Amino acid sequence: MTGPRLAPRSSGVHVPSGKSAQLAALLGLLFAFAAHFSPDHVAAALQLYRHRFTPSAVFAEPYALANLAVLAADHEHGALRQTRS
Figure 1 (cartoon, rainbow, N blue to C red):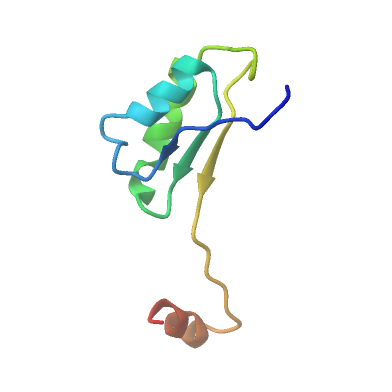
Figure 2 (cartoon, one colour; figure 1 turned 180 degrees about the horizontal axis):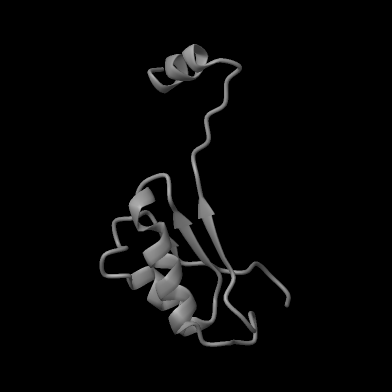
């Protein structure tokens, strides 16, 4: 494939209706889910995408990613301080 691979994005706002997951599946594209906005809907969005995926010239099988926010610190106190800043 030449050129960039396109991926409908979901910020969690569209997950209850699953529009972006369904669109990516229908078009046979990669699906990217912004899990840091809606962590409770990650599994449902990915399941919907995988279940409805239609192979395309770009992807023969479902390819998805979830963007997560990760926080790391040496100690719990430092981690808690980071969550407040």
